[in-house]
Structure formats: structure tokens, C-alpha cells
Length: 186
Image (cartoon, helix red, strand yellow):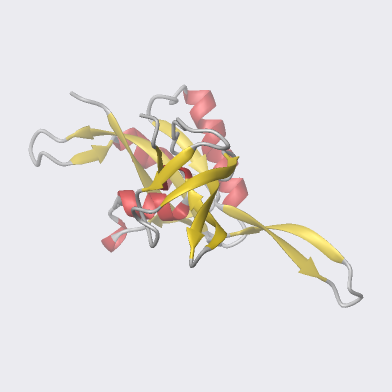
């Protein structure tokens, strides 16, 4: 029985997201369910709010109020051949105070697709960078596909690289994701 994992969305009472996430993590610790409930996240973003008096303040805001995202181990059902979470996992999450249910038709949990996971940014991909500042690279994806440029700056924290390309006779900086460029020194 091969073990894999899927991300699911749990609906909560508004304002209870952090409390629900903490409660699930506590149950995981107490019941030693680390192999079944792998990760619990409340997606947030940092925004700058400008007050009436002109002062600026950085505030962390929930991207999806009323929702918590959980990564669960799933196992293949012998009858249907589909991957499903265990009954224990379902029970623990469903009976956590503040949880109203899983997102899906009629409360039946539906895992997030790979594209949804990438769009939410809940799972960081590790990209191996085989180039450095000053290296010649080829852009392999996006609007500048096939254009050659020189790496100007690499920001691994934000998954970005700035490449200087020649456009209309001028040097133009272009911001790209790390996996959108490829070293020419392969």
C-alpha cells in the first residue's frame, strides 16, 4: 500500500483559522499522527496599511478567511482504486472545534489539484540553480522564450532572477522565475 499525500481545504468559522490550525497540530502531537497529518497552514500575506494620519503599518492578512489548508497522507482504496484519507484523519479534523467541514460536494473532501497548490503557494518547490551572476542564460518559458541574456541578480528567497536582455538595441532587465531560465554552460 503506497503512501502519498494530498492537500485539502477545511472550512472553519470566520476568525477561528489560527485556533483550528493550532488545535489540529496539538492533536497531531498528542496522538502521534505525524505520519497522517503532515502539514497545517493558514495562508497569509503581508500588506502595508496606511492609516488616516498617514502612518504606514505592516499587517499580516489571511488570504482565505474561514479556511485552513491541510496536507494529509492518503492511501489507495482497494475497492475504488482512488486515494483517500484514513477514517482517523477525517474524524480528527472534522471534530476539531471550529471546523464546519471539508470543502467538496456534500462535504466529501476533494483534494487540491497541482495547479491550485502552485497558485496558493502552500508548497515550496526546490529549484536547483545551476547559474550565477554574470552567466549567459537562455529564457525557456514565457514571453521572452528563446532569448539569451546575462544574469544580473538571483533572489532564491522569492524564486526570482533578473536577466539583462537586448531589446530594440537597448539593455533591458527582465524579472523571471528561477526555473524560467537555463544556463548555456550545460
